[in-house]
Image 1 (tube, rainbow, N blue to C red):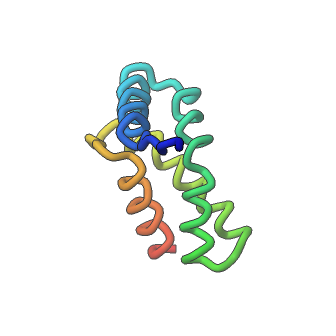
Image 2 (spheres, rainbow, N blue to C red; image 1 turned 90 degrees about the vertical axis):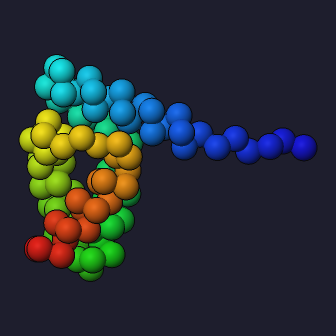
Length: 94
């Protein structure tokens, strides 16, 4: 019988390392890694609130554009949760 390992702690640490690297370098390639990892989750939240595919696609791009600045000024411990709140707030203000 195979046990399922919980990789959430490792994933959180990977996110923290990526954010730390992004803050130091400002590299959009690093931000692109976070985009690739979480784009589908952000889109899911957007479609849930906005109920429109095109508006949701636009919102995803706007949110990740916001990250360019917001990640440099905020101290993020749990990126996935923080991104979810950011996404929800963005959609509620749209």
